[in-house]
Length: 225
Image (tube, rainbow, N blue to C red):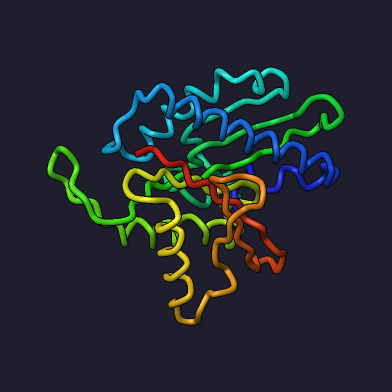
């Protein structure tokens, strides 16, 4: 568990939820501006797409109104690293790290850290302009193993997943991810992604974290193609 995780433990639940909603609102606002500007290429890796997305998130008035700071590729130092028993070079990276204090009725004296883990997703295999082959099945499995499972393990305590849909349709990709979960041994059928009632791009999944806490995880499928 990194030192940035669990920073919102002492924040009142109602305030915490308000802060989380603002983080999600900021993500979607940045995404809409990104698609409108269309200054990216579908062949870009996650880090490049994330940099482009953040550049649009930074322009939102939400940043100043709710005292938000966004950091890309932030190092996640765990206790072993801070105590010197593990090399700092082995620290993981947080794709998007949002620090938020809030404003209005849900201001907080303590900052809350919200992590957005980003992954490229494709429906089918395809080739980039460079000739490089994209393995859609690998991307979907990686979304589970390096995305969902990082939240279940407690590696990230607070945040969501962002899928950059660079090829195909979001609904089919979600269906394929759910099939992979169902066909796991043991089956993870109770962890499938379900559509959100409020946001078209959002899906929700529920999990039992390794610390026995229940996790409700948001998945934002950001269609870029």
